[in-house]
Image (cartoon, rainbow, N blue to C red):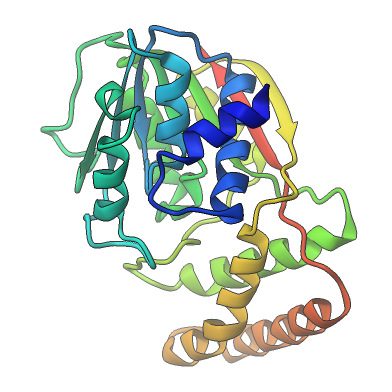
Length: 278
């Protein structure tokens, strides 16, 4: 049953093939965990290429609607830009069930919605893109009045198998040098554990009702982050004059470990932790 659902949703995406199927299957698992019901009004914050958007549109059905927003512009992303992905998705069989807007800053004064306008607020694999814990806290606090339930997902740094170590190490390397940047367009700008995020959500007024660990071995995100760190981290570190020399040496040592791991072990993605809150 899930396989046919994944196939139908993946056909609506601009990217095709095994990689997209893996991404869509993972988002279907998230929607099932969150308990997305047909006919729901959904606000998705940080929609990116629309991988989660398409799944939410399928689950909410023809009587529901997904309003998806992202702070990035339509030209962001590669090899398919956000704008190209949006256009393809909107022209698909799921297109009438969604609205996708870019360059929307949730924290801007003009970004607002009526109280309890949405049944779900969805924040999926988007928190590590943020510049700080304060920004995440502000988003979760501001959106609290807009929806009845919060559906959240992010990578879980608590590894369960040694093959996940490389994904975690690549993330930590990037987070260390990104901490010294004032602005960035990187995938990893902040690093939060599951406990960090749950604490932030609860202080923002949300009460967690369910949490679950979800593992999707077909995802290639671990491999992508490892390649990103190995290709760019050394150059990024040298450009940061304010970074202490001792920390630079540490990162170079971590890169050596990462390279050795890549040569010796297969790379598996981190699990995701997902929760719902009211």
